[in-house]
Amino acid sequence: MNKQWIRKEGQKWIADNIITEDQLDLITARYPDSEDKRKVTGILPILASILIGIGILSFIASNWGEISPIARLTLLIVFMLGFYLSGERYLIAGHHSLGTSLNLLGIITFGASIILLGQTFHLNAVDARLFVFWSLPVVFYLFRDRNKLYFFLLGLLTVGGQLYSINEFQSFSYLLFILFTLAVGGFVFLYPTIQKSWILTIGFSIQVLMFIMVKDINLLWFFLFGFALFTSGLWVDKDVFKQPFNRLGTLIGFGFAYGLYFLLTNEFSSDFELPHSYVYIPVLIIIFALSIIGKRQENLYLHAWELLIFLPFFYLVKVTDPLIVGILYLIIMFVFSGFKLAEGYRNENRSQINFGIVLFLLVCLMGYFNLAWSFMPKSIFFLFGGVLLFILNAFLQRKKKQILKNGGPHHD
Image (cartoon, rainbow, N blue to C red; front, side, top):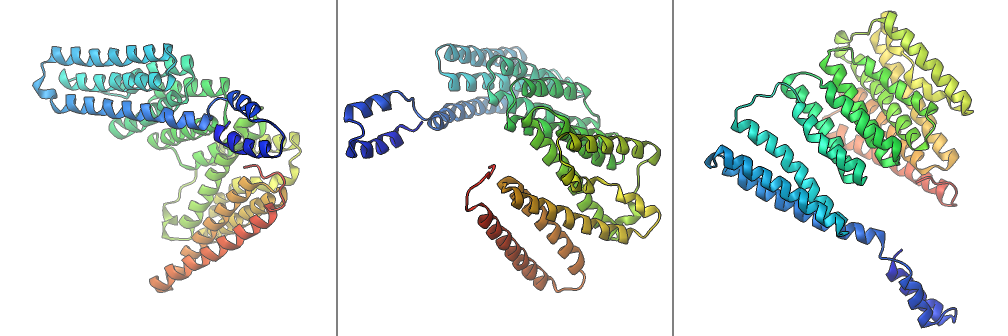
């Protein structure tokens, strides 16, 4: 609650003889400072501690070669323990923002210590195990304090470590994947929020994509993963998971339709490879059946058009011209985004409308780009395209305002 707002409104109540000045003071005293203000002021010690920590670590790294190995080890341990002990002290004293920021610096110093000591003793890493050890104290503090900063750091270390493993060692770290699934997934399951479930869904999807790429598996299996993710949104009980699963699964399916349209309508179609149908199609049929049953359980038969984007039209390249299949994908994307937009308008759902607008404009942009690029002068191409998108967006936004202006379930 904002005390300034209470005080300002209270003066009107006093003027209307609703309450007295003393009563206003009593009312104001009952409410603590605004949560938003505490968040803003809580950021300052975190930023200050991070800057101090970066300065200390930069100084150590710049003078690293002039320090003896024993002194290096001692210095790093002293700084790390200093951060941890100071953080615990401030947490006990009730200064949670400062205590958390110092503990975060202790974690960062711990990881930096491993890296710098590895360089000192010429230890060559062969996998991303460093990030596993680095993540363990984050897991401890996350489940002990339940602070979202630890949650974000854990997601960053596990997904970032996976990217590092693939880039440096060309290998997928199963340890990091298990740690991400158990720690991040377990925390979201125990303490679910929509923000955390989005991070879990995106992080898990990124790791699945990296696994498919590093194992040289056909990318269309990731399309199937998107379909499975969408279907999971129909079956999961907790509402906080439904939107991330549904939206991200839809984006993956739409993204593949987008890419297949561009691929099949250009000369790149000669490089197009299909997954083995005797494995891929049975799995697709199972997921499709589960999605139909899931929609039946939620009485969503009227929304079966959402499955249109997941139908394997790409197998038609075996019996017809790839160009025709590409154009078919363009039509499907127009139909899908149009239905999504119409559904948002019908339900007066702001987030659905925005989602549909983005999808529809992306389809218009791709269709225009692919069809007009080859024969229009480039200056006219960009000028006309920008004007066209501006007009379309203005029309759709105006329609949204007309739909929502009378109130109703906006679902921000």
